[in-house]
Length: 411
Image (cartoon, rainbow, N blue to C red; front, side):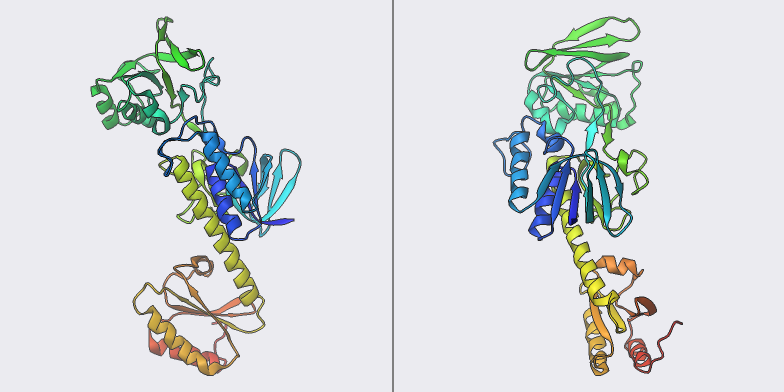
């Protein structure tokens, strides 16, 4: 079976993409290697997702998303994509369980996961006092003491954000006093913040508690002395790892391994889109992931529609084909298109005519390197014979007259 759309990853981005893909009547499959819901599933309370002002748990919200997707016919399979071939018309996905799947389009919703300290208590208290997202969880620590581990831009900026709620924020820094890895402006603001106390030359070695975080052990690297701090939360910022290792060589990634996309969520591979925490972006939240997934799925559906129309009406045509690229939002385009159609009315059925609104279907324009509109492009036997910028009545008339007299050739 060849699916219309396969989504790799079943977090909020993947589930949102599944809903939009299935509603567009596309045969859609989601592959999720772990628990459906992704990182959001591990969040005990979500209070910043629109429409849920009384908070909702991660499992509840992502569970509802999964049911929504299934209702529209999305197939969800628990399996891990380990190798892909994304550079042909039919994309191939090989999985850990030994299965192979084929699709006409793919959405990569692979997510990203925080780098772990791998210390005692970190995994045990994840979601119960250990957090990797201040935007998600800071407000649960109103008037309480917390720890932030890390000293890069993300750590210091998040520490500043947490001070809006917490009584005190200990920032654990591995460097000597006064040395942090973040930008100078953020550092200066943090040094002046009375709620922040920097703990220099130190690392976190253990997190303790009974059901929830109650304290954490900090080791001074110069004295080897351990200090136990009574805190209710530990926020860890030592980096993120996008789940893109298996995509290397298939699509363009940045130097940190994140997927590079444009505003349509298109990747460097034709018919391959990406969404969620695994792409280059400034904010990684459930709501932004859901947005990415919707955009990616609509783009994938448009891609399939354009491919179907283009293949059926253009590439398989036995007649010459005249493509008119235009944009109704640009002044003069509508009048030029009307002129083209008037002049073509005397051509009979000798030429197949197709107009392409680049504001909605710009992929075909990019395929033929059409930048300026209105433009006319003549195809014969799937090959481009001639292209002109149709911005002048005389040029349009001469072009169509030449065609009618059989003079449009390979020049």
